[in-house]
Image (cartoon, rainbow, N blue to C red; front, side, top):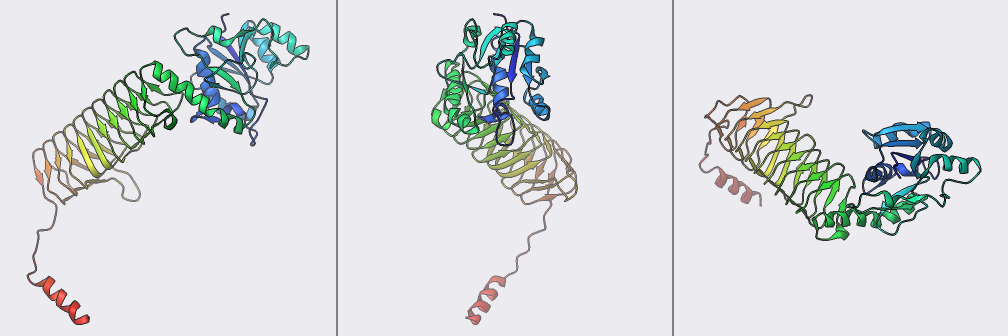
Length: 382
């Protein structure tokens, strides 16, 4: 069969808030999104969705970039199809296991239309219907589609749904050290040679390139990770990390960041809405927000870009080969030129020229005997 159209009937079982069950998440992904993604692998290009009006925008949000047509009832969808279709007559979730041919099947839309008009429900597939696995590309591990009728049943199916994803990763050359402690969104892409350590959570449209290592205890959401990069005990969100870079432990990367190749982003570092150039090292206890950072920059411990004045955000610009001394505060907006240094403990409020040393701290003053006099006062009080 050549089935370019899939019909999803979402008007059956509903969640407590009257939401179609297929819009519920499994492994962080709406079930409808995952099921539609799976059916693409057997040739489906268009989606006919039987859905109440109030949920149609959410369906569109869950099927970005897909050719979607809405219908009020299944009869109208079958009439419009006019050929072989993949029929999804109720809520189903992709899982690893034996196929249930009644849950999702391929059949002639006009045969189904005649049966429906005669009072036969679409869940009762005709004898001549084809199991959807027969349409699958031979190189892919085809899922079984398990029906569910409640949010609790969907939760119960999650282990088998996760097993399907992890088996596919293993077949593709990914090492999952502890499958029981690893969670991967079906929208994620993980290349051969990647190692996922225990406690790894990959969400959204995260993509991890070859020979990288993620974990232990790391969560990545909508991120792109380059080759041979390590992310250890850290959280990254909606950002890009280059190749041969190390992140963590205990790094927090907020949305909008681009971190280059051969970088080091270490423990208790937070990066937000910033570009970090190749070879830059932010080793520990540092906040970099709203900043454009050049190549081969060294951030000393305790450096802070003070990007917020309580009303607006401002950006810092840091050139190539800059050395920022420990406990430097950069008061945005400020620019530190190429090859410049800042002395430890400086609060920099003015631009630093290329190749200059910025010293922005009070000169040290020693008060002879001051501490001894203080201790004498304490002894008298006792």
